[in-house]
Amino acid sequence: MKSIFKSTAILGSSSAISAVVGLVSAKLWAIMVGPAGLGYLTMQQSLLGLIVMVAGLGVSTGIVRLGAKAIADDDKLEIAANQKAAIIISMTTGAVGVALLILLRNAINQTLLEGNGSGGEVALLGAALVFTLLASTFSGILNAHHNIKALAKIAVLNSVLNASVLLVCVWAWHVQGIIVGIIISSLLNCLASYYFFKREVKTEWIAVPREKLLETINRLLRFGIPFTGSMLVGTGVQLILPILILHQLDLESVGFYRAASTIAITSLALVTTAMGQDYYPRLSAASDNPQELTTIVNQQQYLLFVLISPIILWLLFLSPIIVPLLYTSKFSYSAEILNWFLVGDIFRLLSWTLSFVILARSKSSLYFFIEFIGGITSLLTSLIGMQLFGVRGLGISYLVTYFIYYLLVWFLIRRQIKLKYSRENKMLIYFTLTSAVGISVLTTLGNEIFRNGFAIVVCFISVIISFSIVKNKFFYEVPEQKRSI
Image (cartoon, rainbow, N blue to C red; front, side, top):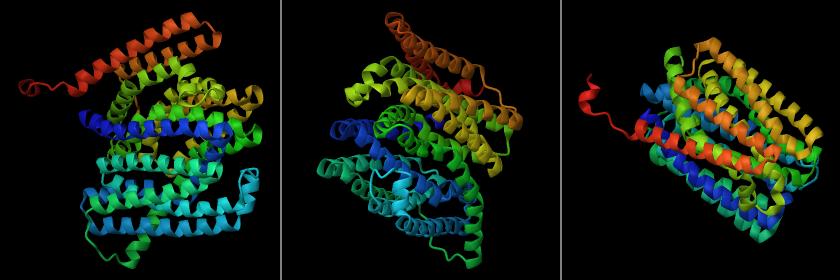
């Protein structure tokens, strides 16, 4: 457990710095460009994220799954083949992506962005696409080597560079500077990832036979193509949502959604980074051992809720103050969306820890199935929510989506490894969930005095519980003579 805590602490610290940088920059963006400008930034970043997801073909994840064993076995030829194959795929798909963006620039602008930009800006995203693909490939190789410290440094450096460059460009050219900022920041991210890759990954130069290289490319694609399909119907839907909101509502609503989702995602950033860069490699190594997988899942969920429970509850309590503080008074709708997001984040955390097990041990088709169900649920509930409640309905749809998604992955994992939550886990989960629902219900009912009293009590209880657990379980050293008993 201490090694898990250490890895989470390292990655969580970098995420905390990135979160602070992101929130400060979001405040400045809100002041400079308002909800509509923030909505436009969200649209461009969502479009780039969607393109990167398709063109990336799951290489950065595939190299972790396929490369970790070669590194553990010290198979130098396999390691070299994996690295070269990943870079070749990224360069090839990047070139194809650039060509398609240039050819389809006007159609993409009119269809997806409803003309809130230009074809030239869409074409320019091609440069950001190539830089982002290479950066993710270098980071994937570092992840396969389980180089947690380097990944943490990259995360901090990238967050500072991204925020600084975008803010300077927006200050200089207003909304028109967003595309320039995205391109420059993606270039700097690529250079930072490459620097740490060259410095930290000490691999000998080995001539990889053509047949071996083609075989490795084929293996990466066999994993990556179904994985990309899974991401498109899962995470991809989250990237499409801003485009859907633009078509159903307006650009300002995209800004309100972005503000709420940024706070919700930032609240999870302290722990979720470790899930992909520490938790997933450990699951992959134990993929054939159901008992060990159960232990790893319980340990990870326990640590996640120890760290995240106070954050979620305090954010729920203070959301009416935090949203205008972090943005401006124009973002009042975001506070209502945020309350639903924070309750949904509880189920999101639970389902993520379980879905990683499916990714580590099952065929890509099963992972595609659960992501497809999650994506379709998100689209349908978002459409219904916007029709019934406007922009507020996005928060409700988020909660419903992750509740359904959690039930699905729980059912599948129970069939695979007979997972049972530990007693400690159940107590933490039930306390966090009932407290969060209680604050949300009282907020909806408008009973401010009772709501604030209840929230203060459960928030302080969560802090005391978490502090006590961290102190006793992660910092208390068992005396040597007792270890031998």
